[in-house]
Image (tube, rainbow, N blue to C red; front, side, top):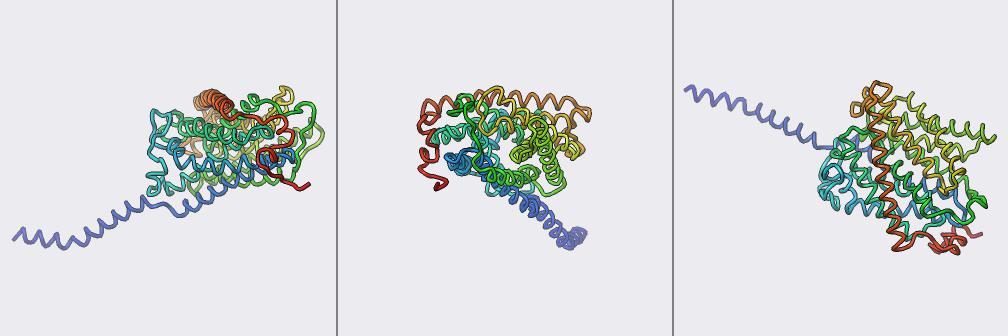
Length: 435
């Protein structure tokens, strides 16, 4: 009789147990379903970052001579195609696959295997992959500013493929993959000061020195053929950079709002600092100087955007405008031909910004970060400096090796006659203008 009563009690509880089981199942399923708001923001951020590469093409294209504008455009636009294919086939897997000793990813995501059905945090894994792809695209395109008007297009293609595979993918893994050795060390790089700008800027300097100066360098002035084009490109870079930095929060929330705000403040402060310095030293403030300054500010705030306060971003911007302007002036004294100041703006700006993370970072603003020097933790500054030193040494050595390989196989530089005629005609058989 007691057993019978117990069975009746269980039957009465059965609907409640089913309801509870169903609720738990729905809760577990919800954990694996992407948040629509975060997904929408990250899709938009990915598009904004992609827009930066055509913006870079305009920014660089306006500063070269009219006979080389299409060739300069081609560096940026072709990277969009080439790096996309590399990223899908194996690049993403090398950068974000299961770590091998903290140095490189494995084959987990070759051909995007295991990516299409997963979520990563609150967004689909595919969206994360696409967002990171846009960073991989623009990085080698940044380097092209150092060697415009003199590198063979075939050399650029091979250089970009090798450099992205051997420099960008491993450094991205070290810094951003959860198993990466710099990530585990506690090095902070919110959106690419080390991974993007430091590697690209340093490689640009090495390329400029290795390839050599343009014909007539030091004897004739290389005047930008279309400054309005450059200004438009700078505006698109500023616009797209909100996706670059605020998107690196990987969600639509307070952290994205912080990165969005610090990005804008630093850009404005750096533009003001560069223009003021130019006004004082050269007696005229130029629009090219202003737009160069705002890009320097955007570069410097990139590693810090989600770790520092708005007030700190103001200081970072002012320092970036002054320091990067000084680096560009120094080029004139050292006589190396970094044609469009990729080193002076991106290399120096990335270096400065990564170090200042170690000074201004506050864990209260972002628990995933750490306190910096001004918050009582000088160890973070040491970690940031170590990362810059190691990444810089690795980048320099591998870039030199890649340049030598390219030089020995397809050759790096066009002939003197081709350089005089212009790369639009000799490399692509086209002309940007009819007259």
